[in-house]
Amino acid sequence: MKRNDPILAPSLLAGDHGELAQSAATVAGLGLKWLHLDMMDGHFVPNLSFGPETLAALRRHGSTLFFDTHLMLSRPDLFVEPFAKAGASRITIHIEPPFDHAAALQAIRGHGCRAGIALNPGTPAEAIEPHLGQVDLVLVMTVQPGFGGQAFRQDVLPKIAQVDLWRRERNLDLRIEVDGGIEHDTAALCRGKGADTFVAGTSFFAAKDKAAFAAAFAAL
Ligand code: DX5
Ligand code: ZN
Image (cartoon, rainbow, N blue to C red; front, side):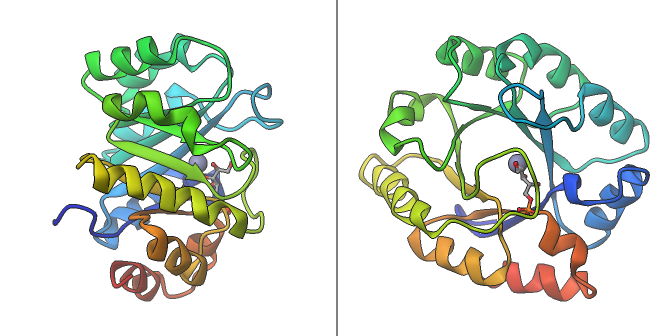
């Protein structure tokens, strides 16, 4: 795969929580490589979702997908080791809560995982600039995190362009991921600004023809 070819990362949050292993198998059965896993702590975001045991169970059930783990936690730094041991491939932390982001990103890499940094719609791109050398993915949230099924926010598009500009100017090996309200049309808008990694929850699980859905993203 070429650098910055489009990647579709279906979000397990929107699947049936009684059939998590089946959802992962559906994703893998389409030939997709990534699964997006949303962790919520009821504090950084007003909702709860999964935990490290969810990842461990999916691994035990045989999933070899790239686990793209999105930590919406006030203290993700306290949970790097459990998520790494449970089978996370990437661990993405948010810039907004106060903790030692640089140390947490270093710990993620120290555990052999890929590291990502996320920012909310209201957070300026400049907030993550000091960490661009420590990550190989920037997650630009296209909704306020906490819930699936929200409407895509067009006002985030210039921020994607800003991160893409830094990537080109500085020749960074970086993926730009978008998450929230992503369907084919909104993904295309993000692609036009430089995004290459597309989290889709509601739209993916609602799609009757998932193979066609995946093919349309591959062609973005
Ligand atoms: C939102 C989560 C998303 C969510 C996206 O807080 O970070 O990953 O699953 O869901 P949709 O695609 O339904 O907006
Ligand atoms: Zn997410």
